[in-house]
Image (cartoon, rainbow, N blue to C red; front, side, top):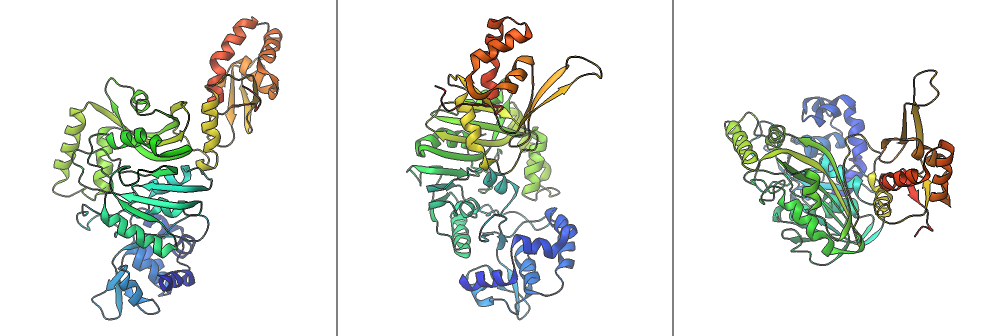
Length: 469
């Protein structure tokens, strides 16, 4: 592997190297699975161009100046029909992340017209991979678990901050390719075969999972479908995770959940959570038809003779279970607490979320405890809206300039409190003074504040001072 890695390093086979080679037009086309512009951009025959063609565009290349014997021995490439040429056997993709370049090894990408996806197909890096990685808390840990590792992406991205990494999967082929990813990236990771927590019964400081959460009628593809009914795999992960976390340990996972007729989705997901602080975010919702089309495209079945039959089977399944939609989002758990926030965030937020996720969960937990002193959170500004010439604003908004970039309408009491609270004085006297200045009944102001301030704390507009009980 060292010879192969040395070739990659010398050629500049990194995300930035490939991006600069392709340029914005060919790079954008490749993101849409159109390779013709990228083939034109890599016609010069350099080692970087040939590595990009071989492992990213998946086309045969001359073996000149490439470690052909090592690539073949590792199973990454194979002799092509033409003498002195190589064809790709696997997809090898550099990861876009800070630190030394790491490489994920997966099965060749299936593009429209390539034929059926094999049942044990090992998928490579995608948008979901990076979405999850950006959610993970950015702190060093002794032990980490990548549950449902696939090609090993999350384990690779945790390797810089975890002392020991365990990677599990139900697909033996996934574990083989994950070990190739580890070896090529110079990362040490232990792989174990099995479902959910069965192969990893111990406790971990950090658990990360991009599970096979796709909800389908048949569970044909291991890389995306668990074979369990509905959203059962996500429910079991959330319910079982606290028993496998050290005190204060973290679990981050991507998930799908069903929107079922007559059942609020928030109540459905809330029923999964026990024994931990939890932050659940719904980022998108698709109706059953949109969802079906998405995953039939994913498995390259659009336009095939089976397409309409498959489509009908999915819709029949959703109708039988009274499914009105499918939610996409993330779930973060922290062992040792009991505070839960379930919400929908459709707008863009600052990335990586992992840089401030601990503060978010701290706020959720603090809102459930009595507090005496508050301070306006850093980066919160006030906006006022009124007709020109009006004495009083018609609407007052508190807005976060960073992090989750929330905005919320408030009344004059919360706005006035935001202007004076800095954590040095108890909140109650401040509210009493605000009541006098605004000529409101003091008890009414206190009652109103007791009703709204916990939510503003949970949403990160105010922080609880350290000496509050």
